Structure formats: C-alpha cells, structure tokens
Image 1 (cartoon, rainbow, N blue to C red):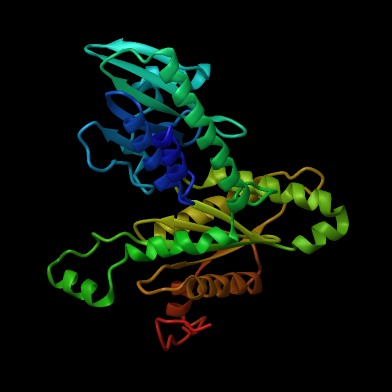
Image 2 (tube, rainbow, N blue to C red):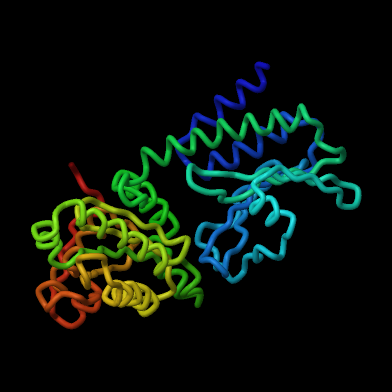
Length: 345
C-alpha cells in the first residue's frame, strides 16, 4: 500500500503535464507485475485528419520514457485508423483486451471533463486480471481528477484557452531551445544554418470590441469571445499554443520555419474571422501583430514588439496582419534599443 501511496504522491506533485504523463507510465510499470510496456497516446488534429501523438512510452528495460515532441510535424504521426485497437477503445469508451502474438494488450480510455482524448495502452505477458484492471482504473481516476484541477487553474473559464499565467513558462521553454548569438555565428561558419527551431509570438485584438459590448451587452460579447476561441482552434495547428490574455486580447505561440509561414497562419485566421457570421453581431474583424522570438528574449520584450505591430495595424485601418520585423525594415517603426538581456523588476 505504501508503494501505491508514494507513486500517487509523486503523480500529483507536479504541475507540468509532460512530467505527469511520464510519472503515470512509470508508476503503472512499477505497480503492475511484469508489464512489457506502458504508453499514453493522445488523439490530436482536426476531424478527418486526426493522428496518434505519443505522450509517454516506457518499455520494461527503459531507464526513461520516450515521447513525441510537442512541435512534431502532424504528417509524420500515425493516423487513427493505423491502430484500430486504440481507435475502438476511443470510440467505445471502454477497457479492451486482446492477445497479439505472445503479448496481451489492454487499452483504457483517457477522458477529460468533456471528451475522450486518448488511450493508455498496456503490453503484458499475461492477461490483466480484474484486480489489476481496477487498480489501473483507480489510478486513472486520480490522474483525471488532477488534470481537471490543472485545467481549472491553467485555462480561461470562458473560452477554455490557456490563461495568461501559463504563458511565461511555455515561452521560456521555447527560448531555451534557441541558440545563443555566439553559437549561431559558429553554426553559420559550419553551414548549419536553419537547424534550430524558430518560434513566433502573435497578439490578436478584436477590432471595435467595446462597441459590441455597448450595443449588444456583455452576454453577447462573451459569446463572441467564445466563438472566436473556436475559430482559433480550427485555424491554427493542434500544437500551436493559444491564450486569452484578458478582455478581447489573445496570444498565439507557434513554431514555424520562417516569417512567411507565420504570416500565412495569422492571415488564415484573420480571413476566417472576417468571413464568419457571428450571431446577432454579424461580421467583425481582428488586427494581428507578430514577431519572431529571439535568443535571450523575455516574455515582456517579445510581447511588446508584437503589441506594437498590433497598434500599427489598428492605426493603418484595422483588419490586417503586421510583422514587427517587416515594419522595422520598412522604416515604419523604430526598433527599441535593448540595453540588457536581463530585466529588473
């Protein structure tokens, strides 16, 4: 019993979902007698194009779990139909067991408050008995409840998008993957340009949102915010991080090859918004500014650049996408001088 309690304490001791998934598969491997492998697979992507994303997989002899990168190219992931056993568990929302060669494979559905989002898959030499299944189900209930608490603390209650307080951590993770300036120059000398990831920060502001609240009331204004968040989910990729910062201001953190790709993604969302008929309100538009995240950037510095591009977009007539770097190159904006990579508060 003490071993179970120790694992549960470790499972609920983290506020990082990646670490939680790794902790879950590690706990189940240790608690069950002789599993060959334990893995968590999530269903990601748009309907009709959904794929299996490996959140954590641990084989019996592995020292650490493996997982797909958050920024993996969706085209490289297996389709749902490529693994019919997982798909059946997902659609039936029930525990399934099946023998495959010398192994037994048991799949458990993983659920949020609203939907089934993935499966837990156990490979074992013997069929998982009823007692073992109950133990796994109990651990998954605790995992599910704790995920719900994280959602409550990390998500905007109206839109379900990430909230502002989760932004800094995700931003700093992205910056940590960027090379320092000296390393970049060394890479250029070795013709290794382009091997490092590029991240982009976009700020989205609804045009004339105050007039919507004034004319139609705050309930209709909230409905607009909710519908816009759904447009964001359908316009951006599953691994783009979407935030509501408050009021009518939204933020996107994405990984793209170059500025043209980032501009195309933001323009797609701008156009989708312009063409959408919002109930009672009708048509509305958004102004968007974006910037590339630089090595040594702080969240405040990158946000300020993108926000200045939004301000320029609004001043130039609204309903447009503006790049901070392009505005500076055109002479439409002066680059703020950065005296230090360290900000003092």
